Amino acid sequence: MTEKIRGNTPSIYFRYYNGTSQDSRNAVKDAVTDFYRKVGENISFLLGTTIFVADEYGDIEGKAPLSSYIKKHGDTDNPYTHGCTIFPELNAGKKEIIIKTEEYQFPYNLFRKSLKPETIKQGVLHEIGHQFDNYFGTKNKRMLNRIKNIQISDNLTKMEKAHVEEYSRHKDLSDSKEFKEAWKKDVEALGKDKKKYEKFKSGWTTSYYSAQEIDITDGVSNEEIEQADKARSEIFAQLFGYAFGRDDGYRKEIIQTYPNTYKMVLTYINKYLGVDCNIGHAQLSFLY
Image 1 (tube, rainbow, N blue to C red):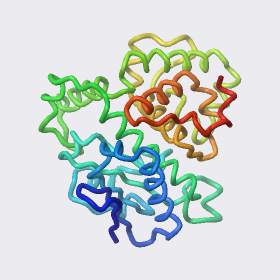
Image 2: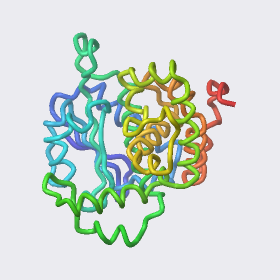
Image 3: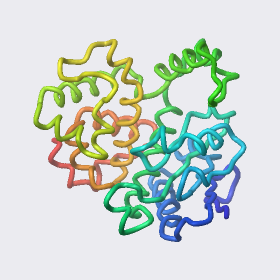
Image 4: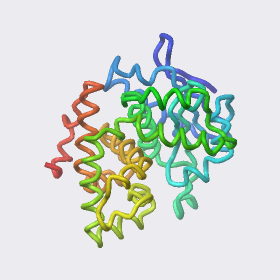
C-alpha cells in the first residue's frame, strides 16, 4: 500500500508492507506530518523521499540499491536502530528511508510484536536527521566526483570503498569544524566520568552513542575525530529527533551527555529550517 503527503509533486511517499500494524503506519505518517507542520516549506530537502515501512528488513522490495542491500544486511548493519537511510549519492540519486517496526529488544519482544508508536516516531525523525545532515553539509567536489558512479552494494572494490569513506568524512553538517569541536567536548567529558561512561556504554540504546570506534577515556585526538565519522553522524541524527520533541525513552539521558553537541544541532535547525526548537521545550531547562 502506498500513500503520500503534499498534493503537489514532488511529494513524500509512504510504502507499507503486509504485516505492519495500523498503529505503526500511523506513527510513521504522524511523525512526518508533524515535522511538516513545524518546518513548513523548508521541508523541501525531504521532498521526493519514499519511506518504506516494514516489520522486518527482509520484507523490503525495491529496485534502488539501498532497498536491495538492506533486505540482505539490515539486521547485521543496523542492530540497534529502528531504521536506516543513506545519502542519495550512493543510491542512484533516490531518497529512501526504511523504518523497521518490529520490536526486537528483549524482553519486550515477548509481549508485543511492534515497537511503541513514540519509539517509531523517534526512529523516523532520526532518519530524517541523517537526510538533513547530508543535504545541508558542504560537499567536496573532488571527492564527490570520485563517487559519482558508485552505488551501495556487496561488490565495491577496495578503492571504491576508500573513496566512499573519504567522501563520507567530508560532506555533512556533522563533519563541520564547529560540530566536531562541540562533539569532542562532550565525548571527552563522558570518557573522564568512568561511572557514567560504563553505564552509558552498557545500555542497549545508549551504547550505540558511546563513540564505539575510538577510545575516549584518554582524550580524543584529531585523528580519532575523523575515525569516528559514524559516531558523529549517529548522535547528530538522534539529537535531531529529540530537538523536535520525540522521545524513545532515552532523550533526557542522551541530551545531558551531549549538551554542546545538542546546542549545535539546535543551531543548524534554526539556521536551515527556521525553527527554534527551544520554544515550547521548558523541560530542557536543565541544560542551561
